[in-house]
Image (tube, rainbow, N blue to C red; front, side, top):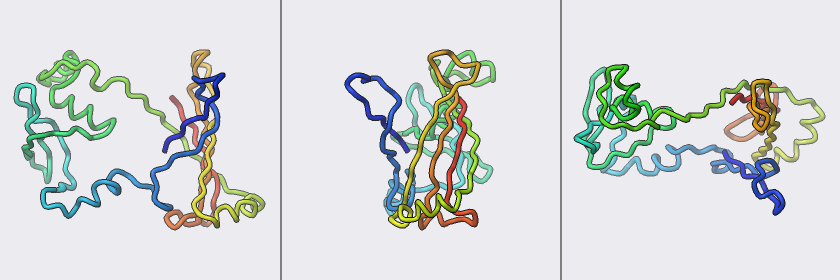
Length: 204
C-alpha cells in the first residue's frame, strides 16, 4: 500500500496533503508476490519450489555466487545455479549476505565469519516502525451512515496524523497516528463487533 500526496506549484517539496491510497488488490483480495508471480508459474517444468527451506548462505567462488546453501529437514543442501537472485526481503537479504561473509569486515570477524567481501553498508540503515494497533467499535449511527458505501464494494479510507515526542528534533516527527477504515468484503467478513476503525501508533 502506498500513498503519494498531491502537491502544488508553491510547495513542490511538500510531504503532507491528500492523495488516493494505492493497494495491490484484485477485487477485495490483497495480493502479494506469491499470488501475482509464483502462482501463475507453478506448473512450469523448469520451476522447483522448495517449501520449509531456510536459505543459510551463498556458495561463493572467488567473487561470484555459484549457488546457495540451504537447510531442509535438518540437513544442509547445496543448490547450484548459474544465476542467483537475492530476494529475501529487507530482513532476510542482509542476514544471508552477512552469513556468507559479505558485509562490514570488523563485525564479521568479531563473530568468526570469514570475510569474503568488504561491504560496509550490508545490514545498515534499516528503518523500522513498530506499531500498536487498536480496533474501535463503530457506533450505530456510523454504521448506518456508511452502509451504502460498504454495500457498493470494498471501501478503504486512511488518514495519518504526525506527532513528535520530546526526544525528536525540531524539524522531524517520530510518531504517526494512522486512522483507517475496516470494510466488509468477501475476504474480510463482518465480525461480531461489526466494521470499524483501525488505529495504529507508529514509532520511528
